[in-house]
Image (cartoon, rainbow over the protein chains, first blue to last red):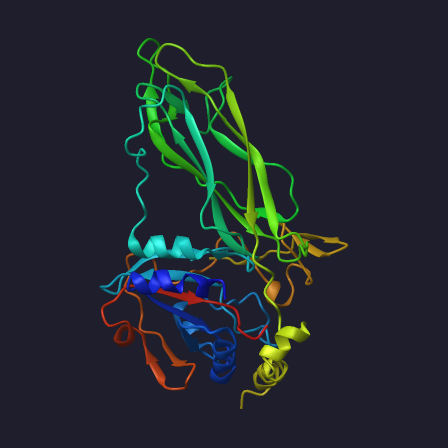
Length: 290
Length: 84
């Protein structure tokens, strides 16, 4: 459903979107009609396609109905020529790549460039923003920390030499948010002329990305979530280093409501009145596939 | 590839909190919450041809991915279920 909100962007870019599950075709029709889904839903009730792609979750016991038959969930991006150009899979069943990430992967990643007609920065400039305009339950979106380092200077990449500080971002404790490992850009080696000492640095304009999702069981009524934390770095040139620097940030971001679950929520059940029957049937047919 | 089941989790007053911090009703390592720890299969490698998967559309007819996308790029998602 979160994906549907971005379908205008996929359509405008002429990118087809398919979503396959082990549900029966009529269950998918009900889901599509209840939620106005316009991407193509595909039914693989015997998990043949999931198996042939090689991603059947074999950690689930074949007699554990109706769970057996699901894939390790994920997404693949296919080029116009039919080649797989990118894959998004996560160990955690609850995590899915945000629509922005999928769209960028299909279009080609945006290149991070200095802002036009902005004077060259005198010090390190840091800007913190979020991919997309809201957060949603279990849908992963990146907190983007953009650095602009003046020419002739660098900041330490991770791991920094002993006694120095690598560029980093940390979040304040917040049990409504789940964060995933930080994504750092490739760093460059930098050798000091005097000593020949070499370490890894970042130059110019670059981004750190911290993937975030809202915890699905965090049923807070607050419509916004505050993402707060601290960015740290240490900037140097070939001669001297500034002391370690830091900056606090605080973003208030709207959270879309938790997905109403037709098996547990009477309002959602009104929208999908057959959900309980679909669930019963999917359990029973797997016990007796005959 | 040797698959290992992720079972780490702690019980909280809101449900089971998994290794990553997600809280849910099921204990990690059981039922649909049978996540892999470490490496797990993700299908053909990047650079390989996308296979022509055989399945049905929601309306019933057999589906042919490459015929349907007709030379357009695509995002193909494998998800758990639209029912639960």
